[in-house]
Every structure is written in structure tokens, then in C-alpha cells.
Image (cartoon, rainbow, N blue to C red; front, side, top):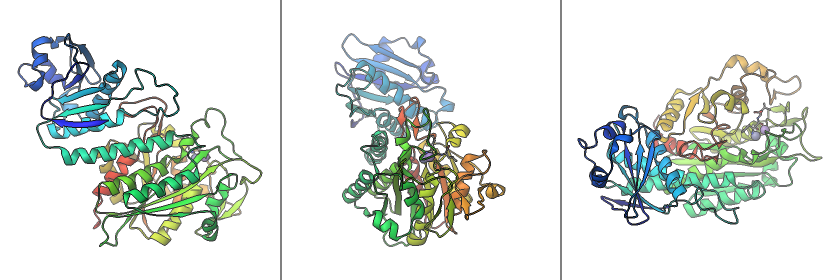
Amino acid sequence: MKLLHKIDYIPRKGEAMAVFLCEESAKNPLARELGWAEKIKETIDLKYFRGKSNETIFIPMTDGTCVLLCGLGSEKKITGETIRNASSGAVSIFREKGIKTAGIRILEAGDITQKDAALLAVEGLYLSNYVFDRYKAKLKEGNSMPLDRAVIISDSDLSDELNTISIISENTNLCRDIINETSDNCNSETMSALAKKISKTAGISCTIYGRKEIERMKMGLLLAVNRGSKRDPQLAVMKYSGNPGSGKSIAIIGKGITFDSGGMNLKPSGHIENMRSDMSGAAAVIYTLKSAAELKLKKNVYGIIPLTDNMISNDSYRPGDIFRSYSGKTVEIGNTDAEGRLILADALSFTEEKLKPDIMIDIATLTGACIIALGETVAGYLTGDEGLAGLLEAASAESGDRVWRLPIVDEYEENMKSDIADINNVSSEKNAGTIMGAIFLKNFVKSSRWAHIDIAGTSWYSKPRGYRPKNATGFGVRLLTAAIKNWNEKD
Ligand code: BES
Ligand code: MN
Ligand code: ZN
């Protein structure tokens, strides 16, 4: 989508103008300045349009142009998400009608300034204009046709901010692409190659460790999960040095299971179909590093991505097996479907020991229990570090990638005990699955500041919601980019 910024814009034939109005301005349009919408003032009776959120009225005019009225709800309740979602309502109507060029004008948005409102609307446009159609032989008219050109109307100069928004949104969409991509075409080797390729163009350094190096480093848990695979495991380590003068760095670690069959504890029908998305954490890490580099953030950022699928073969690892982790601790396999925590455990200890970052944040589609607890709209996060909790909460509020903190309950630690090894990879009790996953990981972090984000629910949508489409959502790119941007190296 090409984005233009203008102070004013008159749609031509076949083009449309979307006007976002809150309830208050819909009620009293004459008393409030309507700007361009002179046309609306003269020709449209607003009495049937209330300005409720999600309310839209599409009006084709006799001169071939169109007007779309989009409600924002009561001005007291307008948030960033209201405006991003109003944009997605507009985009879905434009797509349905086959409109390719549209202007966007926001009249009033409560406490949000005109400038911020315009930027939020643009973000919503980019993110809802997404389609994954590379496997469709023939593109359907209607829903799958994206908008070609958007004109954002605003008095203030937005060029720097628009550049920032387009970088982050485009990277979120690219992140969605690789998650939606088939497991056949997005496997450990293609993903590490992608990390390398992106690094090269974005000025990031990138080291790929293959089977030999992973064996030499004794990453016994990553190797265990990989045993059933036809392909080699990979570990990609990216480093963006945005502040070379500083010794401080933040590391983000993403679960890269390119397909999770469950292994010997095979997933049943109904649970296996979308497991190509089990690399969503890894995808978010790759595109967060790309965003940080393109935005030239003045921070040093590591991206660590352990990659393999979790498959079945004669060589697959089994329940009852014991493996020695990179850290030296031995792990009894209680369930081969709890594979994410295994590859992350090795990645976390490697990161702490070799890269010595000041902060580690891992992001993973780790537990079905997180979907039960928080649904698809909110990700769970766990940390013992109040500063990190604050960083994530603020990044969440800014980006719209919602998170909710769950406790790390020390008492539950004993449920992870093993009779024969140092720790079991699953809990002896069925409850609190998300917390148990975090407790397992905590055993592989010695003393670093660390947070774990469980995106099992938020990374993949069973239906579209606002500006997030069905299937891959790209959750995490905007959250982590905001967290890195806001991180103050001094605290
Ligand atoms: N990748 C799954 C978690 C998941 C489930 C992500 C549904 C997205 C949607 C993970 O590897 C897994 O299988 N977890 C198990 C853990 C259990 C064996 C302790 C689960 O949640 O059932
Ligand atoms: Mn699994
Ligand atoms: Zn998994």
C-alpha cells in the first residue's frame, strides 16, 4: 500500500473518503468543524449515523466518489485500539467494494491529538490491509483485494512518524507471512537462511550454528527435540549494535518449532492442524531485530532463535528418556509435546553464558493452558523483575499487543521434580500449565533479569478481530520493538 500525506484531499471517481467521527461529533456535526466534509454537511443527513464504535455507513455519490462514515464511539472511551480498529472497519468495506484509493480523515478523537490519531489510523490501515494469497491461483474480487493507495489527511508534518509506523507495520506483516507459510517451505534451514539474509541487508551481524556446532556446544535438549527430524537443528544468533559505545544489551529469544506434531506424544486431530505456527516467537524475534535496525534504535539487541521441528521417526526422543542440557542439568522427558521449553532452556543458558546481556526476554507459543487462561486477545507474561514487568506493560499499552502478568509460584517448583534426573519437562499436576512452563525455564536462568512471554493464544487467530486477521497475527513485533525503544539502559 502506498501511503500519501496531504493537508486536504478530494476523492476522484472510483475513490472514497473515510471520515471517522465520534458520537459527539455525529450528534452535532454543524457545531463542530467538519473540514473537507463540507460535502457531507451539505448532502448527508447525519441523523441515522450515531458514531458508535464499529458503526459504518457507506454512501456512493452520484459523481462516482464515495463517502464512508466510521464511528469511534464516545469520545471519553477512545483509545489507540479504537482508532486502529476503526481503520480496519474502513479497509474491510473498501476491499469488499473494490475501492483502491481512499482518503482518511479523523475529525475528533477525544483526548488523542489529531496527529496521534492520524498515526494510529495509518497503523490500522497497514495492519488490516494484509492478505496471504500467494497460494491462490486466481485472486478473488472482493475481500482479498487490498487497498493500493491511502491518503492520510492531517495539518501537521508527519513524515518521521509515518516512516516509523510503516517500518513496524510492514515488518509485522512480513512476520505474519512466514508464520502463515507452510512448514514445508518454512523449516529450520529456510528460517536460519532468512535470518541471515535479513541481517545482511539491515546491517545486523548474524551467526548460524548448524548440527556440528550445536553438538560441539552440547545443546542436548535442542538435539533431543530434533532427533525425529529429517532436517538439522539450527541456532541463529543475530546482533544489532545500535549503541556500539555502550556495553549494555538486551536479548530476545524466540521459540522456533517449525512444526509441532507433539512427537511420540502425538497431537490428536483438532490440535495439530495449525502447528506450523509454533515458530511465531522466532518470527517475532527476527522481525523485531529488523525493525530495530531499520528504525536505527540506539540500543544493542541480540536475537537468539533455536530452530527445529518436533516430528516422529524411529529416532525420535521418547517419554522416559533423559538428556543433558547445555547448562549441565539433566532433564527427564515426561512428555515429548513439551518441546518448546526444551529448546528454549538451551537457548537461554547459552545466551546468559556466552552473550551476557543485561536483560533476557523469551517469547514462545508455549502452552495451550495460556489460551484457556487468557484467550486469543491477551498474552501471558511471567517475570520476577518489577522493572521488566513495567517495561512490558508500557510497551503493551503503547503497541496494543496486550499482555497480562501471571505469577511465578515458588511452591509449584516441586511438581517439576524427577526421580531419576535433575528435573522433569512436565508437571506432575495438570493445573497451571503456563506457570509450570515458566518454572521449567527459570531453572535454566542463573541470575539474569528475565521475562517469559507466552503467545500460544495471541499468535494465531481462529477468526479475525479488528486489525488482526484470521491466522497469523504477528503478535510480538510491535510489543518487543516498543520495549526495546523504551528501555533505559541505566535501569
Ligand atoms: N506448541 C504447543 C502449545 C500450543 C498449543 C501453541 C496450542 C499454540 C496452540 C506446545 O509445544 C505444547 O504442546 N504444549 C503442551 C504442554 C504440555 C505437554 C505440558 C500443551 O500445552 O498441551
Ligand atoms: Mn508441543
Ligand atoms: Zn510447541
